Length: 259
Image (cartoon, rainbow, N blue to C red):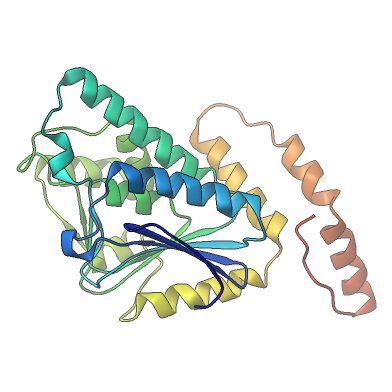
């Protein structure tokens, strides 16, 4: 893609034609996340919400991994309080990603592990390659844990029984199981092309309608009764809706502006 590029050594953020592409860029370490990468992802979310972005795409460099969790070397000095602070920070990052106003697509190629699975779970649409594997094998590797917040997110998407089995047995979910469970939308040999095709389709759709879907899902996921008055009022009161109705009646073209 061409366009304005903002780069960090470990994270690439590129904007072109209303699509913001974030590439986790440590292929030699299977794109394991550093603290700077987590902050870079938060910054990218701010970019997505602050400009003319209509779709956000997440991908991993190197073709072997989306994100293989957090860089383990960063855990060497950890104790209980540091573990609490770490899990709270991860929850903050994941909540920020889920709060992005525009649709988020995760293009998974290879391992999607630990924190990487959490990041992918925050996307609205996921596609993966046939060789992709999803899991959090910490019961046989590090012996740490996930926050209840992250466990809840995974259970919402994969189901309680599958998540408990996956965590207790430290097993990986293969691409076909991820597809059959509904976690991924499609399994494709070229996940970047698949993500590009989906992004192109979303660019032709009403931004506020897509925002309303995301916002309703966010509120419903929190549990309890949901007041959607502001959502409905914003969409039905928008210029986009008024112009689309007029265009439909008069059989003329119109352009979505997101307002």
